[in-house]
Amino acid sequence: MRVLKSAALAALLFAVPALAHHDGEVFSAGALQVSHLWTEEVGKTAHAVPVYLTIRNTGTETDRLVGVKTTFSDAGKFEAPVLGADGALSVREIPAVEIAAGQTLTFQRGGITLVLDNVQRPLEAGEHFDMVLEFAKAGAVEVEVEIEEPHGHEGDHAEEAKPAT
Image (cartoon, rainbow, N blue to C red):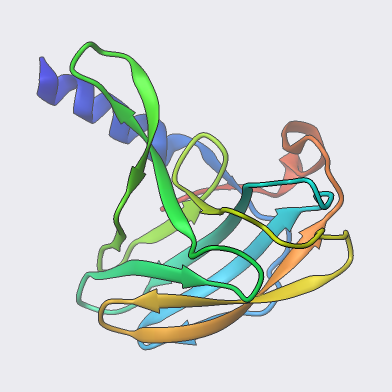
């Protein structure tokens, strides 16, 4: 029964369509390609800010995203939905995110999310900020995150939805 629940959770996580806003710049670290980095505008009182992105592993070996740094927040953390022993779905912090060879993984609402805590400045739409992603094998890569106006994603980007593969 637990295997069935785990399979159902995996299907949920990877069946949710990726909401690709724009191709934007693609940042590379070894065989990894990072793109579609964005977050929404938040005021100066925001404490935690989710960041969404896509990582494509074009290589033949699995790698892991193990760390995230900015100059204006605590180190980033990773959160994912987890199915508990009681069958309840909850969100939990995970230590790293694995990207298998040939896999494209999209961080998105309802799935795996990168969260910046203790944000020390407002994030205004139209601006960008730098962030460093640390991979176990590929090393560090500096990326740029686009800040968008707050909006619902179900309607305004539906035509761009692509399933994560």
